Amino acid sequence: MIQPKITVIGSINMDLVTRTSIIPKVGETVLGESFHTIPGGKGANQAVAAARLGADVTLIGSVGNDGFGSMLKEHLQKQGINTEYIKTVEGISTGIAAITLSEGDNSIIVVSGANNEVTPALITDYEQVIAKSDLILLQLEIQVKAVIEAVRLAKKHKVPVILNPAPIQKLPRDLLLQVDYLTPNEHEQTMLLSSIDEDELYDMKEKCIVTKGANGVTIYQHQKETTIPSYKVNAIDTTGAGDTFNGALAVSLSKGKTLQEACNFANAAAALSVTKLGAQTGIPTLEEVETFLG
Ligand code: ADP
Image 1 (tube, rainbow, N blue to C red):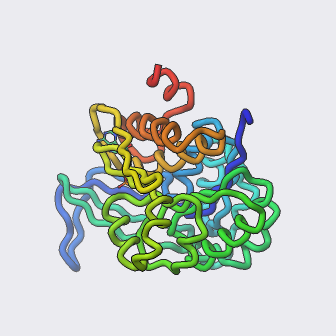
Image 2: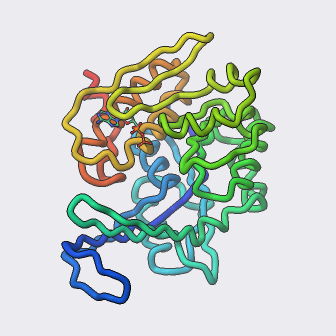
Image 3: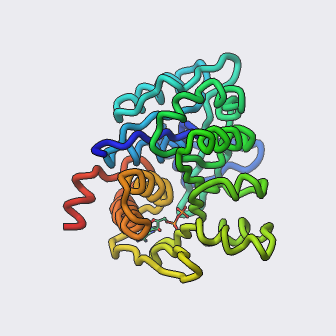
């Protein structure tokens, strides 16, 4: 398989980033230093990662009928992503994250907006897209009910699923048992496994690929824990490292690589991504990862 077909189902946001030396108090107005609009959202980030790393990517999601929505769709198209199944909804804004950065401190307001319009019914409408995919990649920035429906349809059509359980929240046990791979970071894994019964813990752990920042990833195969080390790089910005990791893992697994090989490839892609500023700008191309790996 030269170009795997990956369908990402998830969030699409515009990050509104303001730099300021003074954070305003309630009722106060200050002059900020700079302002940037940067495409984000875990769904979109992971779709961009999978596309840059060589997959044929379709993104299922939702944006508002506003300027950010059309900018983001155009941006995703330029990345070679199929945006045909991104619904534009009326009367609700595109998802945004209003980020204030001030000398190492940050404060963030996320408005999910149109991302909440990714409903189970929308997913059901796109059953054929799911059926024709080699792999489905999901996160938790859309309705959990929509995630459940996506997993149900993927399983019906025997399509493997990676669920990146971020941002972490309580999930139905059935959902966790159905997915093929879970990619929590260390904090998310603790939360995830805390609600699992002792007798199911073994099965659950076997599908976990736990990312540990600069310490690489841990996988569990036949009760044996293996760590696949990360690559040593000069880390500048680790925002979106997990998203690059997930996109890369999806590409490698859908090309039929072993779990160890796929984790190694994803570690290399994610390591390259942290050497540059920004979540999406730092995502490397397949060529860059292959050169890096020698
Ligand atoms: P998240 O961003 O979701 O919290 P992690 O911090 O665990 O996820 O990072 C995801 C992956 O990104 C790691 O498994 C690793 O491959 C890579 N990574 C993150 N930080 C670094 C770093 N400082 N150096 C090298 N690789 C890194």
